[in-house]
Length: 346
Ligand SMILES: [Zn+2]
Image (cartoon, rainbow, N blue to C red; front, side, top):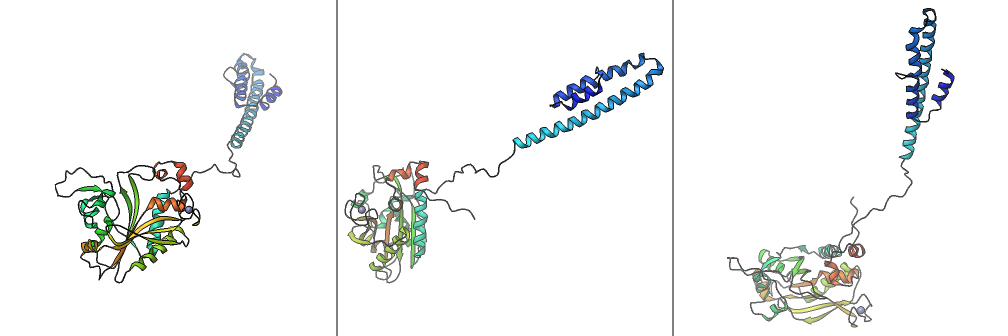
């Protein structure tokens, strides 16, 4: 065999598989060198020693060349693998989807923050309420005609405690519960879900209200207008023209509705404000003496005012949401467009 040719073949092997084939060809059990070593016995003794030494040298030489080539091929393979799996840190990252805060949640947080600035604290009223707290104690006795304005979801009257249960139609139950449990002075807010049997373009069976009540010695109608105007300025982030119109609510006397200048047309008149330049924003009034009496208070000693507004309405006006129903249809695109970016965790 030609040692020079074998060495050339080995150093030119381009894969580990080809190299292994060559190793088997020369040094394997039936390889060329192995066969010649096995054939040594047939040689005359005087030639055997020299030939044996020569063959062993060839074997060692080939093994050395094979090992060197194997190392070389393995290194090349590893380098190729590393090059293929390399990460280019200069590439732009793939887009990362970040959710947004639902506009209703955002509105409720912003309402609470504005009222907190004015000294109001959260107060609680349950969503499953009794007829007493939702109506009677708010100066709406049974058969009062105003009860019919609020189509009520009554719950199955299987209770044995004598109460008629319902889903609250207004957050005003918070007023009654506060008056019963606390002594003035207090400024409380109640923000949450309310329910009415109503569904059309501008009504949903479940919506949200914010309720506020301030009872303090010396409180009068002017304080109410001042606090509410400031609340709207804080919530909308700018000074707004407001006006107050007389209205009727059973639980306040006198009662009023507050309008603010239409933001869509700056008071010029448009479709949003039905061409009046004003949009109705909340109901308010001085707490009725019959409601104060629930807490054992007298209107001369502890006057107060209360107000209520629809959270959806405030959110629609602030964020420009065109349709009430969008709030409840769970479209991700709606939240992406009108929602608020989350505050980055710090
Ligand atoms: Zn307008």
